[in-house]
Image 1 (cartoon, rainbow, N blue to C red):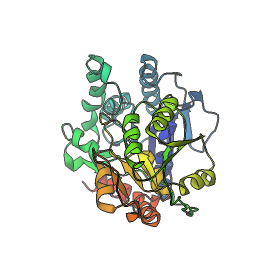
Image 2: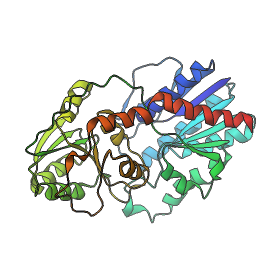
Image 3: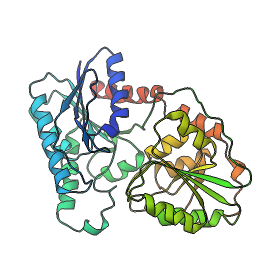
Length: 368
């Protein structure tokens, strides 16, 4: 079988690698069509991976901008022009950008024997912090690129259950399956040693405009009534100064580590913490974050305010604390242990678990 995987963002490449490995192990001929533009660094990528075809993308330098939308539209058009000259039996398309949905649907109509799977990794514009411009006519048009065409797929995979609550308007429940993010399980190198005389929190990842900095400040204020608070920050972003300032004003001792790529160095910092912060604005439509996966992989419980899948997981599996408007003072922080968190990660987010889910989806296409 000839499998084509289409992906616009290097930030989704962990998912692509798992898909590539799964289909390759099954004896299929697999090719990945991806962008040559690195979204985070805003630069052209130089590395080359086997069986990856890099499509040149127009550069853009602002995450919310007309130039970015034009870049995505051109990428989608260029990818499917390439695919017109290839033999494809199964087409797996990671979404967003939404422009890929329309182009893939048109390709499917021209090639009805091709099995088409949309893999919804994110929801645009729902997950974007664009409250000030959501009333503009272009925003529903943007969503419509996905919603109008998504049911052309033979199956729709979602990154979390929450996305299905929106997509059910356009796709029958029977055509949707949740396949969580996953990783190859590497030996655990953690050695948790958080301090006894204070509460140490960790913020990991991009410090951008979707994180809820005022809520982080309130959490710190409430915890400090019980014990002093340290906040370790690993990462960077346009809201870095605001996060540091808010945390300090709330009473935290802030330790800014910057970007860290070495796994052992990052693990050593998280080993000194009691909780990771998984805090986003309530306008963000997301069920499970990459950030929470990073914390779980490190064996670090989370303080979470995101509704949907991750809220239910934290509530039911005791691998963190959910924060609504509740007062955080007086909590027994020893009720959750790092080993429990790490076991949950290994049992639910491993490549083996996800391979089984992908296999079930693919088999359903050919048994119908």
